[in-house]
Image (cartoon, rainbow, N blue to C red; front, side, top):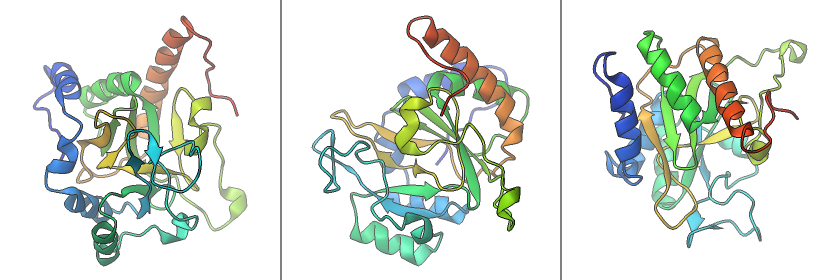
Length: 245
């Protein structure tokens, strides 16, 4: 379900080869779609059904000109609908065989969402340093997702601290660097199909069997890598760092 890479020596080459050589549809073929969804739920990731791509770039929802085809929940009540209940997920998967699934963040886990090249650089650094990274997903949309423990939702709302890195999926174009998905946000959970005519997908690089780490143990390497990535991009086109609301 996940890709493992031997010892530290040669790790970067193996990771780069895996990312370049992996075919998008393999994620859904290994163990089956339902098994992968149940494994994610079993790891504590609450799931809810999402839309899926239709005929290339169209969305299965009925919204004309959907801005995020195949990437959004089916129900407006996705935050309360999201669950880890095995029987419910089996029913959804069986009744909606084409559906993608999202995982609601900020309940049990957060997601640090970074550009692929920055994520690759940070992952090599983290693994080389012996840091417990946790689950990581990679998408053909050029993003890498690091799944972590949530920073929490305290009973006292005044104690919940917002972060300038927070980002709703529909505003992602405004945040070219790191996006911290926490309470009120979501990401696609593998296996998921992305819009396009060439079988693009979101798939596990390191599966949900890896324990969720504290997000602060990953934050510095990820922000450093993103700063360099966005800095390189800004040499060719204007890009802001840190992200602005």
